[in-house]
Image 1 (cartoon, rainbow, N blue to C red):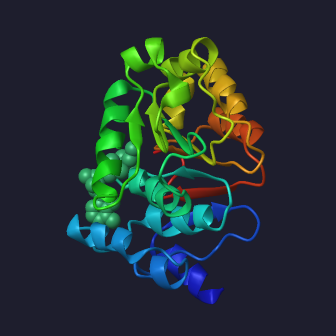
Image 2 (cartoon, rainbow, N blue to C red):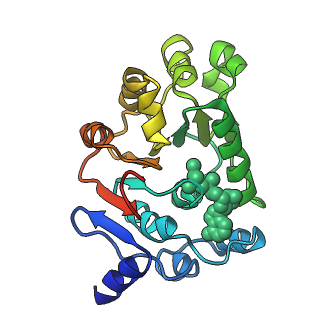
Length: 237
Ligand code: ADP
Ligand code: MG
């Protein structure tokens, strides 16, 4: 407990919520504390990631403990890995039983970049990672699609759900990345509709963003249950 407080102070991590797990001291703890397959941690070091960033230290254990979270940390502070890694650890790849994780991004560029990042992390293992392209959204046959992780912008995903019968009821992880932008861009209703389509009752939702205005926090709280809030540095800088 003391140790957790010391780490949070050192890395300028602020939390709100019940029973938050302690921050990581190192990536190796993902193996010792959370039973992570060592190949994933091996891939981190191959990518040159030596130490977790502050948001990774705190958000990873929260998600790995099965808790929902909304996380706010500056641009460039490694939020992508903070949500991708726990998701990769938890889902069973191989695409049987439908889509297991959905990552919503405000722009196509960010969605494409997230897919690239994800593929680098799982090098050496067979995960089906799909980007929701325009073509896929308009004419995809989702019944036969092999997909573990689906990355999309809100409108394309919503279209696929409503017009192409994409079933999201098997989704175990839902990430709203750059959620401040998702909501700013007027996607509130579309995001809501996607959140509703991800109807698995044991789903773990998380929000990541660089700023956390009160309005977004209020919205976030309507979506999530018993979530832990993590802020690195200051809330709105
Ligand atoms: P954010 O989403 O917070 O803006 P990104 O997830 O895009 O930031 O990460 C920014 C950069 O930092 C990327 O190039 C990423 O590969 C790199 N990065 C992420 N985590 C680490 C780490 N633990 N150590 C070193 N570099 C990292
Ligand atoms: Mg980001």
